[in-house]
Image (cartoon, rainbow, N blue to C red; front, side, top):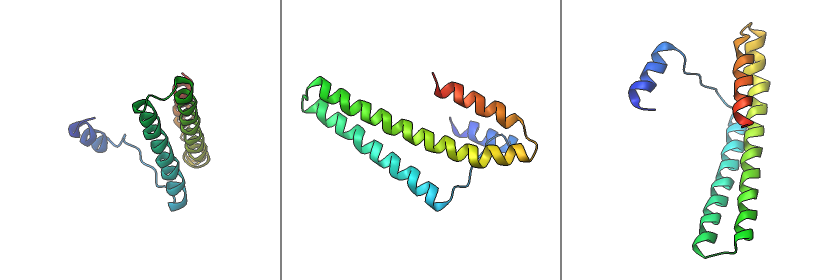
Length: 106
């Protein structure tokens, strides 16, 4: 997304953000840092001509870690954003959640 698109979203009010607690932010960043390390490790295995099943096992572990990150983020989203919006009468959030779930399940 280029700068003009970002400005356009900010001006129309359709760009949503979420304030996260320092604890939630730290947990999510720590997960991403571990995943980033796993990916670098996989690249290193490839560069060292590691055996294919060994690389695939590490790739599966990185996928599982990314899925765990997504589950935690989704759980936090439902417990905060979705609950608050529904309580405030913003039922469109349910459609947004369903759309998000459909994208995650592809």
